[in-house]
Each structure stands twice: as structure tokens, then as C-alpha cells.
Image (spheres, rainbow, N blue to C red):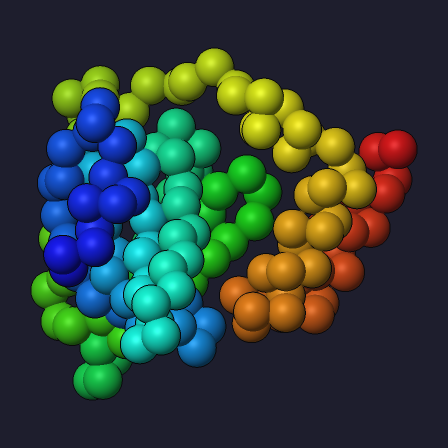
Amino acid sequence: MRHLHNVIRSTEEVVELGQGRIGDKQGIVVLTTERLFFFERSMLGSESTQEFELSVIQALNVSKKLGGERIEVAYSGTKAEITNMQHGQADSIVRAFHRLKRQGAVAPTPPSPTEVAALDPIEQIKKLAQLRDQGILTPEEFEAKRTDLLSRM
């Protein structure tokens, strides 16, 4: 938690926190006024962040099992899963996200140069391959999206 300040932007406020997993990584799930992100810090000191700008999130869905909750994040035509969340955490994050949307806090942002570069189909395929390799996408989901992107070239 004390390393969380390394990834919080000066322009955003933390709205909700939780714990969960993306693939084999255990970390903190953070909803801010600008984004939803997953922050993982290994025992060796390395840090990684997977983030979803609120303006690109198309849907957040919660599913519950005896062992915990899961959030499915639908964004930019793909999906990510945050699993193994404690009961109530996923619900709280999704409710807060919808509250931000109703308040108009989730407005489309102009694309950054990085996002414009991400529109390149080859770059998108590379990112999708990383998601597949991390177990976030199934091989079938990867192939479907790759075929779609190649057909646009």
C-alpha cells in the first residue's frame, strides 16, 4: 500500500480499493476519479500496473462465487478479469464506477499520443498477444480479435 503513491496521479482521487488477481499476479485494485487500475508489487521490489481509463470502460460486470468475487472489465473491444476479490469489494467498486458515471465524472478524454499509436493494428495485436500470454484472453478470443484487426488493414 505504501508504494501506491508511486502510481496515483496528482489529478485524481482514490474512490474505492480492493484486492484481487489478474492472471497469476496478486495486487490492489484501485478505482480513482480517472481510471481503474491493478497495481502489483513483487517481493523483489518490481512494480507493474494494468490500467483502464474510465472513458474507455464500456462495462463492469460482477460475478460471485463462494470463494470470492470477480470483475469483468469490457474496454476497447476486449475484456480483462480481476478475480479472487473479497466479498463486497467488487460490488463496491462497480457501484462507485456507476456513481461516477451518473455524476458525469467519466467523460471522454482526447486520445494521448500513446493511445493514437495504440490504434495501429500491429501494436494492438502485440498487446493482445501479451494479454493472451498473461491468461487474460483465451487463445480463441485472441484469434478472433487478431482476425478482425487484420481485416481492417
